[in-house]
Length: 110
Image 1: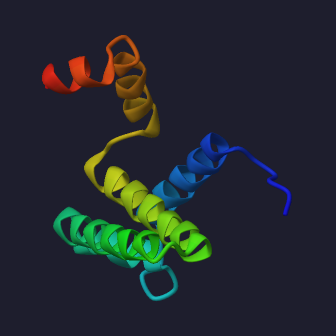
Image 2 (image 1 turned 180 degrees about the vertical axis):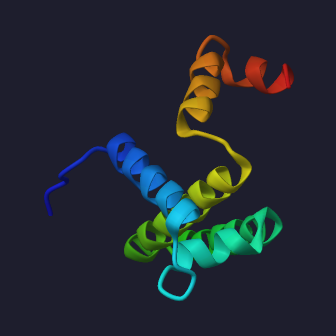
């Protein structure tokens, strides 16, 4: 399997597509538009459900299933970001800010 884009490029592309579905999405033909219309509480619940499924796959040591469920988590997380008006750049900036601290120091600063 060859990777055509890196994760960052894929996430940027996904974010763009989700934003398009938010503004012009057809709820009958677009799962993304449908869940965006249900609101951030519903989407947050979906993120949680997908995270649990990913954890179950990981505890079973199923690499393929964990990869698949991880993609589901990332997708639903991105839909949640769009529903809340959060851009990947904002999250990236937060991650960049955390680089200045050690893990324990950063965690204690929150």
